[in-house]
Image (cartoon, rainbow, N blue to C red; front, side, top):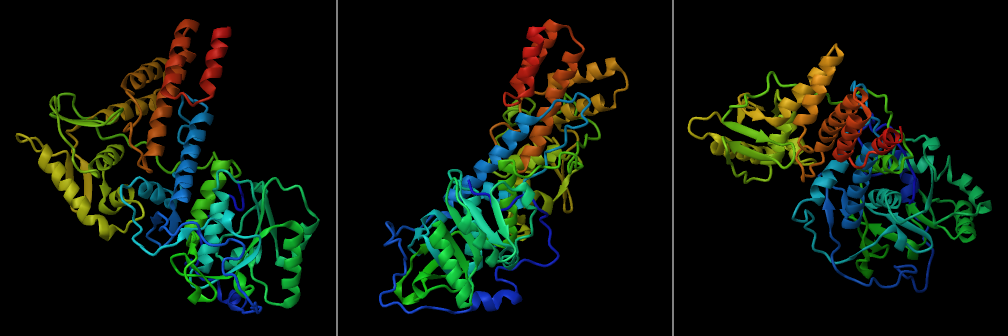
Length: 515
């Protein structure tokens, strides 16, 4: 897999833009076309084998990702959470339970949510096959047009997230600045060669032993000497170069804002479509890839962004409305199951259960429909809440959701299973005696009836799900620490059943068996 950039700060003082900064436009827009008797707009690619419209996702910022890249993003996100589960070291006192559970970047959530949708958000019907960076011809290809910078960013991310790739990507500081990609610490990246200017890349001519391909991403040089040296470099290394700006006429592509690619002579027709990414989406996805590959430490000692918020009081066990979200979710009126019809209703209920003091319209819209603008989802939220209130106001029962202006919360009289669990977790954290902790740990293990909202894949749920899972594991381990060998073994085996991915628990079980 290619690795260009690693973890870095996602905030910038200036607003990102898809075009290069003013100081670089002379380089990007410079023309140095050579005359060819028979220019081949496809370089060495030949005619595309398919003219079908490539499927993909259009994000609210205008970025377009083909399905293979969207799938790679969701797979990388899954890998991150699996790694976090695998590496967790149980702590019955709960001091480290919240660490390393930072939500993934917003673009990742938007892609994951869109990838789970049943319809393709992209409505463009122009023909054109998808082009991936691996299909670019050897040598240099220049990219111009309003979508050129977005397409170059798409090339970088596509290589970095390619699950089957082992390419080394080479770039320069000035190129990354032109693309508005934040500077990075090269010490966190295993396969990054980064040079202050393109002239320094000449050092590659003496290098060899690359496990995979070599891709150079750079601003197209305008002076003849730099262009000659670049050609010599590409010939010596067999590398592929993606250049932002004009190159030879038969090796320059014009890129529309949506990624559709034409030869520099536009009348020769559409070539295909490239992934296009805006600066912030690029930053988010490169951070995901670095974390998934383990090239960027997650700063395990940073303060948690979300903590438990125990409800004012758990709902009464004789309440008429019962919300069960540990394991497969269900909503009950006394013993009768209430049918929840709208897809947005379950994430709404589960999120409010995790935030007993409520949430605003904007907060709910951001988690249920990540990446979409609040004004576009407000009516959907109102409709979802109205239907829930109507369906749960049975025989004078208070509706499951309360609304106070722009603020929503679950009705406090609702019996919510996770509130009882959160209350037991809080009691374990506040216990001052050994017996008090044992009593609370026992309650936690009894109340934990399965992972939060089992079977659902909402991107926002993972930190909440893993905190509860960790609390259950911590409680089993705490009880095992105060039990004899036979009972300790049984408790640790139950903990391993809560999370079969965790590697600490099998080692601890083996140690008890060997004692």
